Length: 320
Image 1: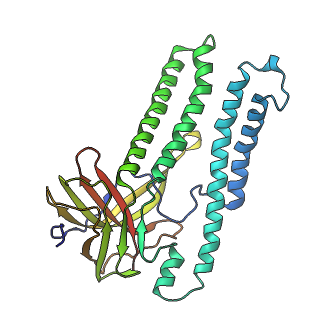
Image 2: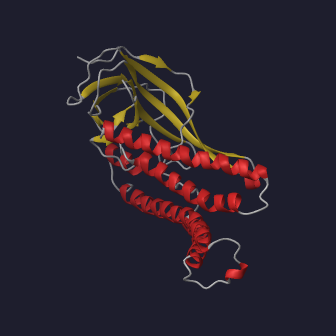
Image 3: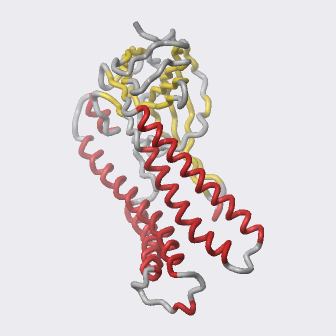
């Protein structure tokens, strides 16, 4: 017997706040292969020179250096890490574009879905360490950055008080990154691997989507919860100009259906749980390889538990 209540469909569009993970297949940098390499080379080159100079491998006149060598080495790391990230993201986008061209040569519904995105035809499994890796990178970067900048701000004479105030805010931000990192590590250890298995690949609009949810381990009594099947549109918006220019990832729900979980519902971590939704025929299918606005379907599971709550989203291959 399914622990989920009846479907409650909401066809009204609404923004989905506090989402930073890009689902589309486009490159994370938004640059071409050559552009990404050249852009990253600026940071890698500057960071490498400062790092080697700080380690006294590259000779530099110490009389013209107003900070200790170890501070210069840390500043080199601050420049080097973003450059390596840009190179890695550019290389991944290049390899994915090549694989996409190879998958496009196949035929059939499953092949067309594979040409759009590198699906596992059996299920979507959560990479439980993905958030920890992102937060770990941010925590290390902020710590290295503030160690170098903090020395200059707090130990060099003549630094204005307002600069020290702003530096203190960044120090608190670095500490908060570590707090979030340890929280995500705890979440990954507590819940382990979760997944959603498909009865059919791909699923078609206008049919019934039958899914099997693999629940997390160490799952205690559920206080309340809900499972939502949602059609999501994703795009990027450019905010500001010049030095204040930032790129923001935007998500909007075009259609969603919710099934509630009653309080006190027993869910055993050893059993897969079946859940089904009636797919609408008038909504767009998945297109994760679009250059501009990406469309995808996801299954979101939220559970209120004693201690740390559970919340995960799984991609679902729903195509027209």
